[in-house]
Image 1 (cartoon, rainbow, N blue to C red):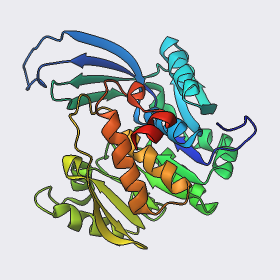
Image 2 (image 1 turned 90 degrees about the vertical axis):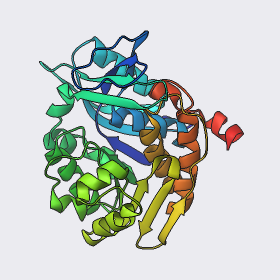
Image 3 (image 1 turned 180 degrees about the horizontal axis):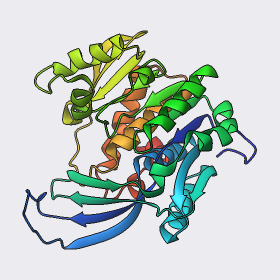
Length: 309
C-alpha cells in the first residue's frame, strides 16, 4: 500500500463504461431473439478495468478519463477509488452521459460487446494537457482505443517526449490507425483479431508471427500478441522472439481477461521484469480472472496473487 503522497508509477488513460451484462445460452445470430436469465450492471470500460487491475496488482495507479455528470459517473469514480486508483485526472463532461457497454456472455464464458462511448468520446488533448503532471510523475503510460485517436496520439507523443514507456492495447482497432502513433509505442499488445485488423494479415497457423514482425517494421519496439488458450507470442527488440504458455483453466467469463493481462504486464515491467517474465505473470493473473464473473470484480487482490502464484 502506497502512502498518499507517493507517486504512482503506472498511469492509465482511457475509457470508463457502465457494463450492462446479460448471461445467455449463446451469442445471438443476426435477426435472432433470445432470452437471458441474468442481467447485471457493473463498472467496466477497458481503461477503467486496466486501471483497477493495475491498482490491485501494483498497489496503486493514476487515471485520466471522462465521465458524465450522472449516477453512472459517480459509481464509476467510486469503483476506481476502491481499487486504489487516483482519480485526480477524472474529467466530468457536462451534457454528456457516462459511457456504457452492452455485454452478452455465453455459457462457455465468451462474450460479445457493444460500446456506447458517451463522455469517453469527449476526452480531448486539452484534457490531457491539463493533467500533464500525472504523465510527468509516471514511468509507464497505458492506453487503449475507446477514446478519440487524436487524444491517444497526443498523450503518446507527450509521454515519449518525457522519456516514459508507452504501452498500447489497440482495442478496438479503428478503420484508419494513425501511422505516426507506431513510433511512440514501446509495447503494443493486440490479440489475434486485432493484429489481423492492424496488419491485414490472417489469423491462420502462425500468421501472428508475420503480423508481429509487420508491427516491428512500423517502428514498435516490442509486440506481445495474446493467443487465447494458445498463450502469447512476443517479438522484442531486446529479447528476440518467443512464446509464453497459457495457464489451463475452465473459463466462466472472459470479459476482463485482456484488460487484466495488459495491466499485469505493466505492473511487472514497472518492477524491472523483462517482457517474458511480465507476460508469464500476466498469463497467471488473467487465468484467475476468467474463472470469475464480472469485469473489475473478477480482478484478484495482491494477497490472492501471492497465494495463487
